[in-house]
Image 1: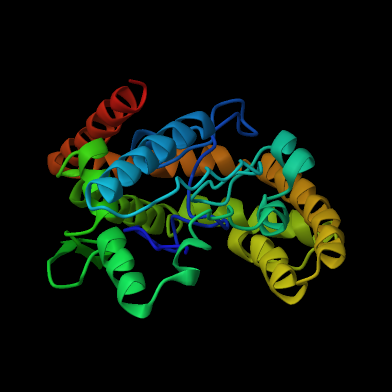
Image 2: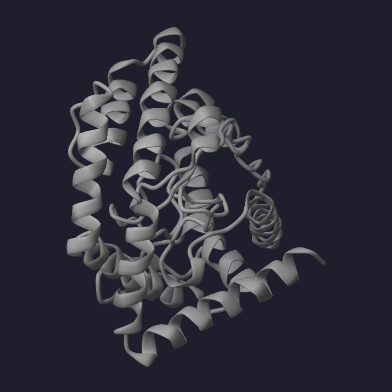
Length: 299
């Protein structure tokens, strides 16, 4: 049975499918790394993502067994390539190899959950007890808020919450929500910056010359996202994947020619310089909590 874990979903931050920025920011068209908000606080490598996932699943398993219920660890989802840069930036190398990563993610599908067969032979009462033990009863919960982010309600009496708390610490959920809200605010201000908008106009003109009628970086990805949603069978998805690489390569070339990465970086530096000290403290807290979690995961 697949479960929805506490997660922060902010459209400006999660541009690609999967909801996880799991690729380091590589070189931009100006020779520097692709800019990401807040020191890359939302960026986790595929190896780190896997280690954290597996540690969390081990903790969930232990918790369920202590409650006298079976649980089988869900395998980590395999990385499918592509980038989740919150501004929509990408490199020529990534574009040629994976496009935006949208079709590959759709083709890969969700990780198989080995727990799905477990409740099939149980009566309704035991199934309900199993789900309550895993995700919580709903009677005990916290509601977290942060500027720039949607409120987040978390059940606190299930094994999912217990596992995350054991791995990340009790302050993690609030820290993650706070930084996600801050990052969304940074992205919104950067993409409204005059220098960014001017560079994006140059990019759009380049894309029109290449036969792509899009006016924003998000629209370019949206062309593929819409096509993926219309193409359910695998064969049409592969055709969409070929189209995705084509448009992504044009996108990356036009980003390079328009200097978008540099304009974004400059605007981001201005925006982040104006943030209060509390924003830097929140970012440092999140990075510290994640480092501690990675240390625990390695034991």
